[in-house]
View 1 (cartoon, rainbow, N blue to C red):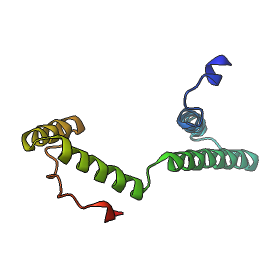
View 2: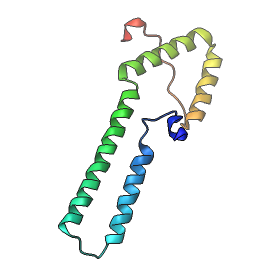
View 3: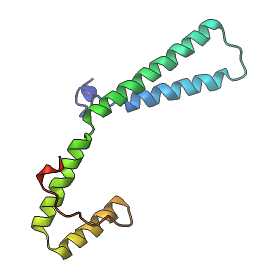
View 4: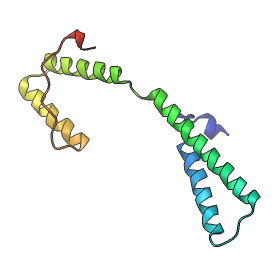
Length: 120
């Protein structure tokens, strides 16, 4: 029980969702070619509904922690402003190349001109 109490991300239900899906898939595979009673169909439908609810819960949890468009714009504007203040043009280019490599992209667009505080 201590393992679960010490979980740094108790709202992450990804493992539970994966387990539910794996168990349902295993059950359906075992039923292949067999007839299923109405009660069995009801049980499978209930199980599928529970999986759907778990997926919806995971989506809601993720949405609560995701950055909003406004927060992303503010973050981007702040970073660009700081880069312009703190780096020479050569340093900014080196930073851009290194960041692009870390992100696994060929290149990043050039830093935009400072747009001021009225961006938001």
